[in-house]
Length: 266
Image 1 (cartoon, rainbow, N blue to C red):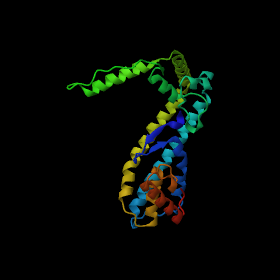
Image 2: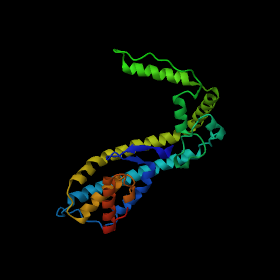
Image 3: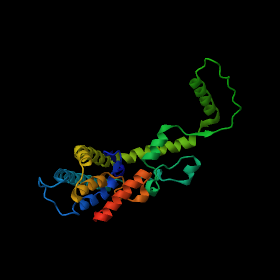
Image 4: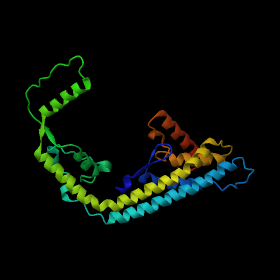
């Protein structure tokens, strides 16, 4: 759905619609310091100008998110309820049909992930079988082919079609496809947002690269670097405990310490 759309920023972090909501704090942080005249004589004049250009693009990105979210909300208002055919039931567990749409607790219905999984393979179940005889591996045989043959024979011997499970799987896929046709406007809104936000990030890249490689000599110059780090940070919170690795914890710790020391918002 609309909230799951992702694009990739310069640092390789996944940038989602939900993450953008948190980005409003970047704009607030940008105004946390009094404006400094971009006079040629200021020690960080170039950084301040780059920061101004970066802030303009942040505002554009947030505006793109606002417009995309509004389009998605309008489309979602027209989206019908999922049919009862897609409701997760205990009888499905008995058919080894697993609900793979449980993000955020799920809504009690099968969705995109489950339908995609059910399309990939036919429903099969275990069956009793006689011992399987294999020809021994001989010198000169292709080992990959030999193992592939063994695996295929084992699966064929141990599995059989499961008509009841297959019928239910086909029912779920057909019901999801019919319902999903109504979500095309939401998908279109997401795709438009992705194209626009990627364009903004393309414009950001050379600006941010120069910000990162230009030394900061003043508090104002350091704040420009902080805003860039904050924007591209995975969760934009600088929560030390959220660092998956020691380098992630170190970056979070540094960002949080700067924010606390200077009174910058995160």
